[in-house]
Length: 234
Ligand SMILES: [Zn+2]
View 1 (cartoon, protein in one colour):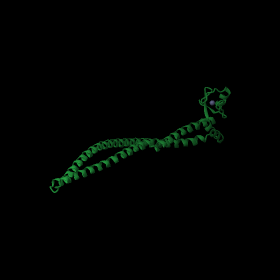
View 2: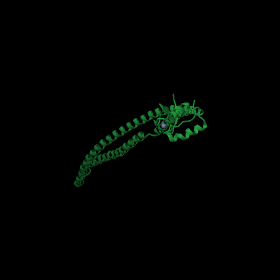
View 3: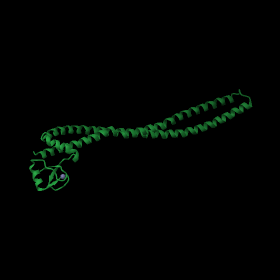
View 4: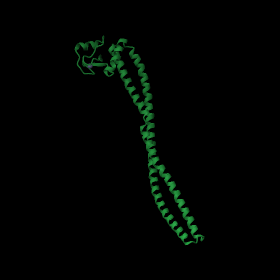
């Protein structure tokens, strides 16, 4: 195997490693992102914040109605007990009963409106809770799929790293240095294939002398345009 071929093999492994490592990074980010669940939880919180004051308002209105009713009954009992004989006092009591009853009607109307509001708020809360459950289920199933993919990728990366060590051992330390230095400058692709006398990366046509040199593989030969190391793959 020529040095160019050994380097090409190394590059193939490195590109595959890079791709898998990038996917692992994406998976990592996705595993840490639970924005959908957080958004659904905020909706549930908002719905609860709407419902809670409506419920306490309902309770205090019910209590007020009960107090009103008791007061009406007590006044009526007093009025018809025969103990009150003063006409002015009796008239006052009748007025009070009338106003208590009028107030009772108003309270009942208020309560009815409020109960409709409570019903609507309870419906909104139930919807938000269902959506939260949905989001949690989706999140969990995505999680378990991602975890599976992550484990598979980690095993593949480990195998590739072993392959890389072996492939790198076929390259001289000097050429490995050249390859490593070129990687960041050549988009991780410092080796190009010579095919039909053209560079596979930049497409430039090489001279016959270069083609011959690449075919022989005794030294590293560079593309005249993009300056990548050329390899002849039969
Ligand atoms: Zn080129």
